[in-house]
Amino acid sequence: MIKSKRSLYAYSLGALVFTVPWFFTPQERLPHTILGFPTWAFYAVVASILYASFIAYCLQRHWDLSASGDDNEE
Image 1 (tube, rainbow, N blue to C red):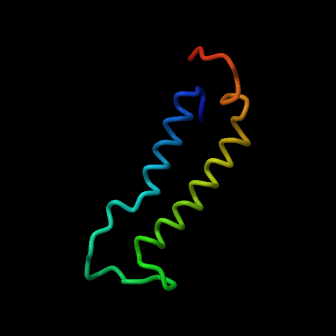
Image 2: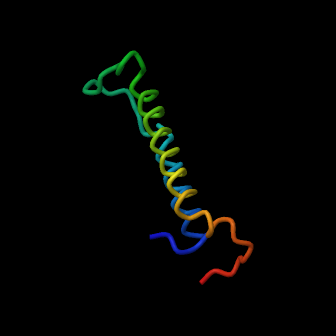
């Protein structure tokens, strides 16, 4: 799946962008709270957990790619 440092960083940055609840706007059809959190805060917490899981996967699976001193992209 991830073959170069550039794609590793791109996937990480893309996943990080989706953790920001910038798209939430006040709408009548959304519940105001979920488990006591505002909807946007609940989304941010869940997205942060998913992002942490993604980073843990990348570190476990692709450590040799990110830790290599060779900056030649192939």
